[in-house]
Length: 450
Image (cartoon, rainbow, N blue to C red; front, side, top):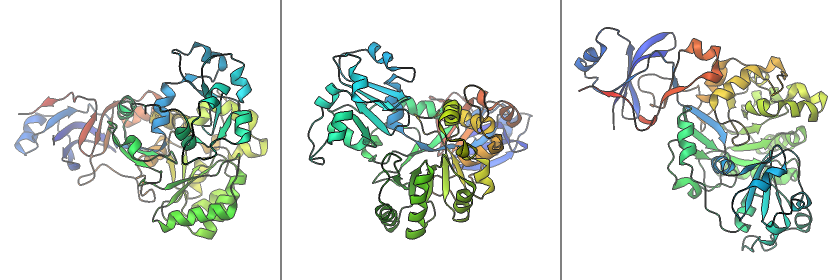
């Protein structure tokens, strides 16, 4: 494996040279301006050199909640956020896949387009698929679903939280290629991903060319078991508690998808009955009052939040969320004060996969119109980056750091810390390393010391 020497990186308040040997940071030493190549060569630091140019060096970033296949599919789909008329321009003559619908559609809405093609459209929440009549006609029988479609689904075309079922019922479709998305994430400093798709089996992504370390929440994953509390159809509390207990008995924590206060009641009861284990999480906690925040913090339950959803949908939240709940909307600072470990994430494709945009959204909390939502929930750049530096499998531990002996998962920015904090949205990434292997740029652009 190539040894790397990062010259003149900013680490904390210091300018340093960092040696990567194998999958570890081998040494960190003060930077020397005079003939540093020769000095390091004499000391046995022969390696491929990267001029860091004073750029800030961070631990590699972890996106704690992202959907790989859905994000890749999103980029192959028709964006209907501005209206269904965009579907009429879809190329080809087969299935049309739309995403980003602002409203809950029915079969009739899609049939009115009079397109002689099967159509399926996803609501922007990701929780609802609507199929046209022609699409419903193409659903096939499957052994796992002897009664594949309910009367209500056939009448409305609406399938709530049915991603796994639709994958089985729809005609065979090739999985998207994830390599371009992986390269894009590497170029943004992301070295680790927690895929939060609940039914995702590892074989669906294991053959892909991925630059990142990927953990999953699916049945055979290494991460917490994803349990969805669907606002559309809340489960029986006892049955949900049994699912939490079963995951714990299997040696895995749980990640409970919870958005509304009603869902919180069931989640809290389940945790209090089944018990809490290290790594138990709540995904989103989109509405979280002070009592809940204190309870989460005192019980060591982690929260994964997505600040860029404010930047994308903030104006809509101001209209649709009840006024009494708006002070509790997508909290960050209040959770931290309550002692909650907060994991920043993208929830791509629903949120922006660029960590710099997450940092900016958490610091500014601005809606597209410029309106600010709950300025008291703003957090500094350092807080968000500390969250990105946490181990997704052991989030209760201190954030990872750059030091001799630590894993060589690194993100080298194109500017100093002060410059990054001044304008986080403009920050670029000069280089990314995963376990000592350079994943951005590729192929490596560096000088070799002989």
